[in-house]
Image (cartoon, rainbow, N blue to C red; front, side, top):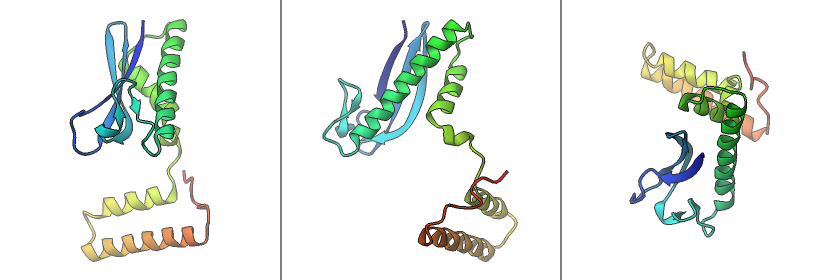
Length: 155
């Protein structure tokens, strides 16, 4: 029988700490980062969810519910379709369901940031500053004009 739990990376931390999904199946344990961070004082250890008194708890707990439902569904489908169940398989499927944006084509600003990062090695500090200023001006222009980037999905 498969079991789902959510645990904090460091339950005694004084700062925000990651929340992990632990999924146990067939005597194997998957550890998967939810990407969410929370202060331990805002965590309900018994229910393994964010305390309801915490602002934004509903959204975060809904995310955890979606992750739990997704991993259970992936597990069920893998069993019914006779897939070999591995942690890598589960992680890949979870990433596609939980973070579908990772699979989208890069946008203009992604390319620009990558360009700046790559050129840090070969360009002068002042040139990199100019590139970063350009990036900031373009982002500012886009937000002031309330434009959806026409170059959002470059191939």
